[in-house]
Image (tube, rainbow, N blue to C red; front, side, top):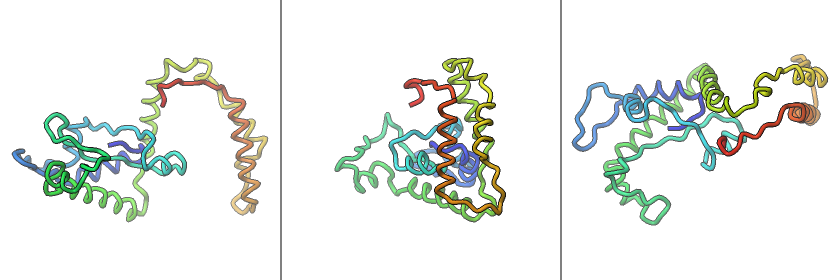
Length: 206
């Protein structure tokens, strides 16, 4: 499972409400949930979203928190998944991939509960604290690759640019032209980019 940090808490909470199904000769464990299985298999770690998938435009262009998840079989003992081939069919799935569509059913329940929680809650159940943990994780990972002068750089120059552009000085009753505001913001961001220290992190960030 990969997701935006804003969704981490919700994903875990909902997974803990669903019973994980017993398949084949597996022994049933009382009160064993989907979240218990996730902790056992993935050690409770939610991965980072990359690019090149259907969620890319929502995440990278529109800034919408996204999720990429699914179930996989034992790669050593299960039938080969003929991805994007003529053998990737209903017959293969019903006989080898997910007999009885047990995990399709579980996925439908999980996604359904996620949507209900997001749409029915008076306050959207996002937790920003997970973003701080993720940023700290990234920082520690790349700290040794970042110039010390960049780490110690203050925000004084950015603040001065903001003041010069009067960004944030508009009152709630201020009426403005959307095109003019967009142009001002673009100029502001360009100046921040020009005055900032440029540093290439290399292929490790891609």
